[in-house]
Image 1 (cartoon, rainbow, N blue to C red):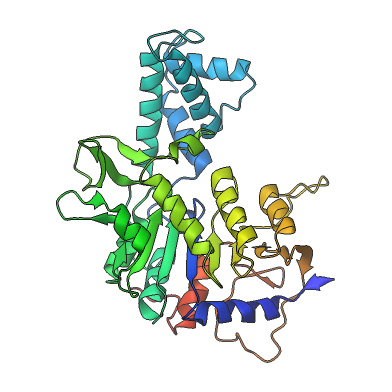
Image 2: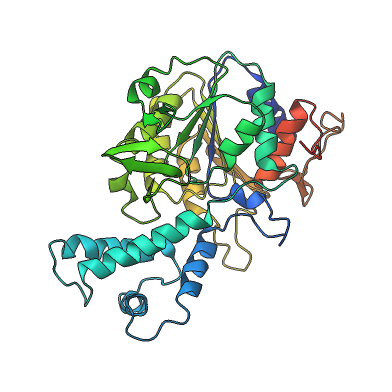
Length: 392
């Protein structure tokens, strides 16, 4: 048995064209990787492995006994992965909790741990603070698609990314959007507008689940600010303590928006660039899908479902596990898919009636691939008659 990709491609087109059903997108860390730096040809923003390397390179000349070197030694002793930024930050924060009040933990003072955490977090923020390069790219295609469709229900975009690439693309295309903040000089978080959601329907809703490089705390309140305002950005950095961080404002309200969106009748959420590595977000999605059987989530995953090699391990095992347990969560890979809780290979894509002959579809082994955000946004562009190579 196989999944018929042509049939599901038709369904995909139908879901994107319905203007009365709630339509949302969850854009995660893999999406910025689709934008290339014209000078180097590499991804504009680094992934988690890239961020870890940047931090490691900063300390390549450190001598033995420096806080960072000692931290790496302690991580190794504890059996932690020194190349995993999430493990590194979790370890630092766990020790900080114990050291509160001036105590020493494994030879580290509270001040040393605070300095290490601040340095790593500042590096992360700096690495993702970049502008879109000139020319066409996935974010501009996505923004043009949003600005070109006329919907009775507004598009809602959720993102775990800190960068401002989507904001830049929406502004360039003159697409109005609301991100939960109100004001001019130092826009403040407006919980009432977020909860009531009574803004014009042509305004896109943008919810940054883990914060943004332009969020900072001023006089005890989180504000959206210009990049020249001093202070550390309000972000949920990668660590296993993310759940605790997410229980404060405005992160809690952003998470609630995702829940409320999925509880709407016939809601459809497309997930792009997400590895299903965040248990808080996973639980939010799954719990809503359990309550609302009419909602559907389609996760477009990068690459093959299985890793190369005889073991046949899964690239993103959590996504497959969740999808086989929830019929209204689908996971699409290049070679296989889990649809209706059934994991099967894709059948060879055959479009005998040439229904999609005008589309620039990315093909991998005779199957359509949407795991690359650029391939998916090209499909969106061509739904509205926009040429994929348009330089706008």
